[in-house]
Image 1 (cartoon, rainbow, N blue to C red):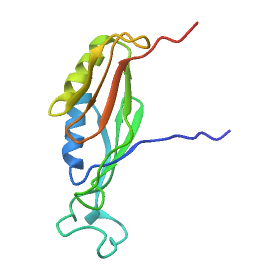
Image 2: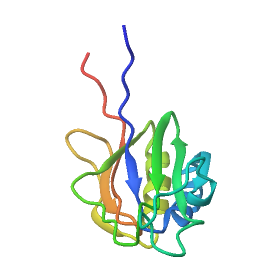
Image 3: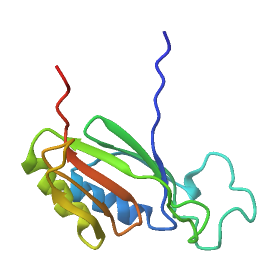
Length: 143
């Protein structure tokens, strides 16, 4: 049987390196690799990126716990994130509090942390890079 995985890929409009540093601080993310456009084994096609983007991040990957996320600066500063949220689950309320506080620094809380019918503690926010997050205590599974 083949294993299939879906990994979020964030295009951060020229702020990827800043975001990687932020996620390391806010979530304890572990950066696996970073490749800049100037390090590409194949030359970047002419006109694909704006001047000055040569040292921007072409591709990176990082882990938050066991989950892998990939990210890039994209092909210019006009990249926009929309239409999705990353859902982050922790086993304890203290872990949720820490992650939510870290992610909300410089961002916008859209739902403060509170108890819901599906989680002891749940909240949502948009971080300073425009990434939407839902942070919660892992819901209990029915027995």
